[in-house]
Length: 81
Image 1 (tube, rainbow, N blue to C red):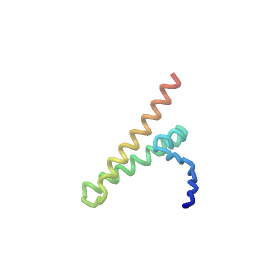
Image 2 (image 1 turned 180 degrees about the horizontal axis):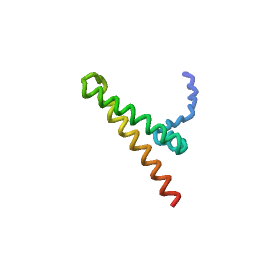
Image 3 (image 1 turned 30 degrees about the vertical axis):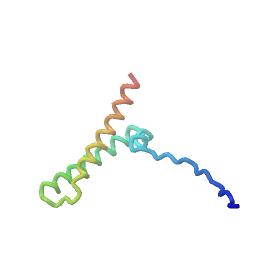
Image 4 (image 1 turned 90 degrees about the vertical axis):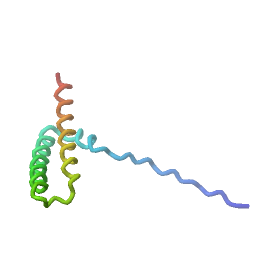
């Protein structure tokens, strides 16, 4: 007769979303990150205009990240009111 294999249960690891990571940050850190992303976005646009940009998807990723952060700041401001 065949032996039954013992099945081990692995703990479920939940991935933390980008929004969750931003929500853990304080307001000052979020604003600082937004300014850094804006500078990077400017550089990416400049590279795209010159034709040196290889990963064009990075522009939209930066825009979405800035929008996420601004949305979370707005949520916090509305929660205070």
